[in-house]
Structures are given as C-alpha cells and as structure tokens.
Length: 384
Image (tube, rainbow, N blue to C red; front, side, top):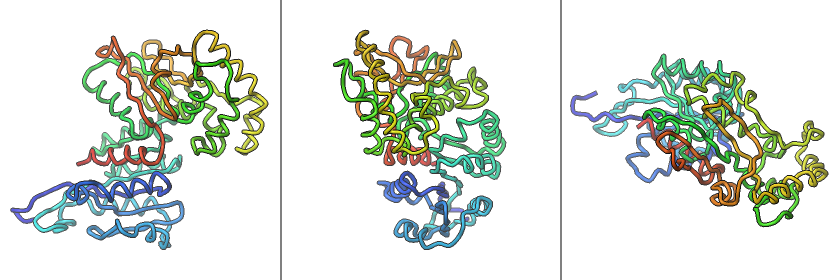
C-alpha cells in the first residue's frame, strides 16, 4: 500500500438465499443512491438451495447475477464459502481496486433463508472471523445454548452479528431495545402486535363497530389469497412466530436472558389452531375445516364487543414478573393497538423508566420483501 493512498472499508458480502427477500436485497444493494457507498460493497458469492456463484474482487456482479446463479453448476458448500471469505481479509489483496484507494476488507455472511441448518452454522462462521447479518429467526429464538455459542464466538473473534429484521422487518425494534439498554435505561415491559398476519386477521375480524362481521375462516382465507399467511395458515395461527420474536427481544434484557432455556418453546403461547386441526398439513384442507369453528371465534368477538373492546393477538414481556407470553387479548377502542393499526402493520410499545409516562412506540409495516430487505441492508451499512 503506497504511503499516499486512502484506506476505506470494503464490505465483502456472501448471500445465502435468493428468494423474495434475497433477490430484493441484492437489487437494493446494487441501487444504493450514492455511487461512493455502492463502491464500498462487493458481492463475493450468491447461493441458492441448488447452486453458488462466486465473483472476484472488482468484477461486476450487478448486471447479470440472476443469469449467473442460474447457469452455475457449483454446489453450495459452507466450508468452501468460509474459506473464500477468510482468504480476502487483508488490505494488500484488494489494494488498487480504485486508483489511490486501498480497502480494508470486512467479510459478511448474509443468511436470507429460514433454514435451521444454516442458522446453526453461525458460530462456525463467526469463529472464523466472518460477520453475520440475517432476518432468519431460528438461531436467536431456539435453545439458549445455541444463542450463547453465537455470542461467545462473536466476543472471541471481535466479529459482529446483526439481526434487526428478525423481529420487525425494516422497523427499528432490535436497535431500539439495544440502545435503551446500552444507554442505561431500564425496560420494564414490552408489548406489541408482532405478527403482520395476525394483525391483518384481527383488524378485519374485530373492529369494535359491531358484534357481527365476516367469519374468522373467511378472513383467514382472504389473508392466504393475499399472500399474508404461510401456505398453511396454521403456521401463523399457532403463535410460534410471535413466540420466536419475544424470545429474541427477551435475550437482550439481562435479567431475562436465561428465562427461556428452550427458546420460543418456553414462551407461554396461545394457539388459535383448533385442537382437532392441529395435525392438518394441507393449507386448503385447514382453511376448509376451520369454518367449522367459526361460531367459537364469533363468540370471542361478541364477548369483547360487550365490554366495548376488540381482540388483538399480542406478545408481552413483563420484566418485573418474568412473564413472557403470546396471547389473544382484549383492548379498548381507544388503545393504540386499535387506533394506530391498519392492514398488516406491526406496533411495539416499550415501557421504560425514561419513557414512564408515555411508552416509546414503533409502528409500521412489519412484513414484506422490500422492508425486510431494507432492514438487512441497514444492518450491512452498520459495518461502514
């Protein structure tokens, strides 16, 4: 490196998963508004479930990446990927990428999958000096021992992991709780509507204006047609997604870090799946049979209306009592979970000592490829 050259960071990114979120992320990365900012990112590799494509430093990856990965016959290999990422970690290897500029390389693995197998590789990558960014909830909401392995590997090597999109897609929920705690505030309670799917369903089902309305099964069916639910809506109605998000948040609160040894399975969770339908694997069959339980849901709506309340599926972390639960609750028509929600929005309220009189509220779209990819990209920008 010449004595007069300038040194900048070069974030070298390997992306696993190029579905809806992964494709959107690569597109957003290639279209960053500042050319100078774009020049500080280099795509090293893209991996789908079937193939991987590698790029040399300085090569154009923005133009034909879809064709490149479709044409590649290289099979995905985590060990080979880790080797490639660690081999480019010196300034000298990328000096001269632009005239007068040398780059200090920051290797980052981006996992856009929902794979448990990939999530369990995070300690492997972190221990080899490779940072991790992901919207994948599995690693941070499973058993405590895996989470502790991730934290230990990060501390030992000085690598970082960012997972903002695991809880609220592009909403600043994890960064908010981290900042509150890091600055010395004391979180006393977190409560929110964490599922975009369940937000939409109950916004439509229980609006507080009438004891009657569309049937629960018909709203679930429409939500499925709109793409708001999993292929089988039971995977949303069982509350597991909300339980995972509560697990992730609770582990940032020191007094609760050990509270959920089995991760989301330790969360007190109310499933909205009728017991008789628990084993139904077909989404079509599930929605069809769900109509047989509409009267039960109608009664829940009617009972709430009698109290001048509406139904919302919420997640609650009560720090003082140690209660962490995902449940169907009733709220008055003036509550923010009623007045501030629309469509599939998420809303999270942070009750803290500093925000004692009025909680800190974060709300907005909590699902969708564009906002999820934005959250992942925001995490990547933290490395610069």
